[in-house]
Length: 107
Image (tube, rainbow, N blue to C red; front, side, top):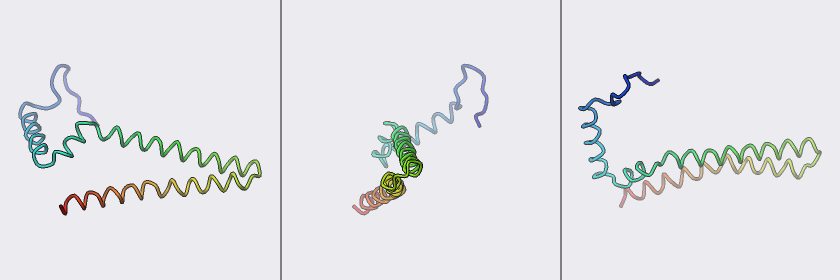
């Protein structure tokens, strides 16, 4: 839910803007890698990844449905295998990311 504001007025007060700038400055000092990722738009990359996974899921479901409707066990099996791989992919990617972060913290 977004609070309404009169046209022309900034979303944040002057004090809030100063506090936000201080937080950003501290972040660049303490964790420049994260600050850089935020500046690059890490969220847009996240949404692209999700879109690819959704398209792959739809493809897997279509393979299963086509295989079942056409009576082709090979096609249905291929769809099931694709869906199984898609379930595991985000889990593996997330675990690798967690391991990398843990290794960076140790060093």
